[in-house]
Image (cartoon, rainbow, N blue to C red; front, top):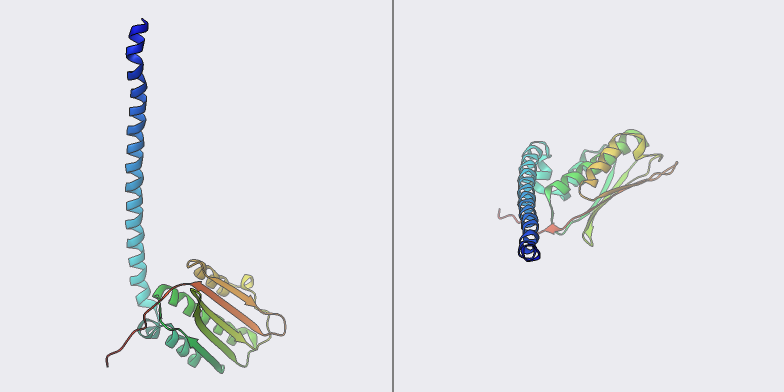
Length: 192
């Protein structure tokens, strides 16, 4: 009996190990398939989002980049606006759009709610961060939690690990800071 048990013991030990190895292999293959299908779905969704966004980006943003788009925003603002843009390269479009719309919201709030007489807009890139600062000399009191505009901007920036900070004490000034980590690409060149 001991002899029979000695002969069967290695087989019994191998069978569960082989079964576990097969299960592990099947699970590994399943994880790889799920990873690939998730990657494919994410890529498809991102491509569709880019297609839709091309229909809603302001033409100046899509054609000429964030710097010129910010200058155009300032020209369209009914307040005197001082603009300082220092971007030695191009900002990737999804990030540029998020920052553009955040600046647009800050300017809209300055016009509609703050009583500002002028605004300053500064946009620059340093240490891997795209930073925009919008300062209005209005009455203050801006609060991202009190409305949907700035809260929506905050959520959109968070998509890119960006932040929105607002300092708006009663009596002003209101300072809106936007920071988004991003790399710049080479500036566009024109051969006209």
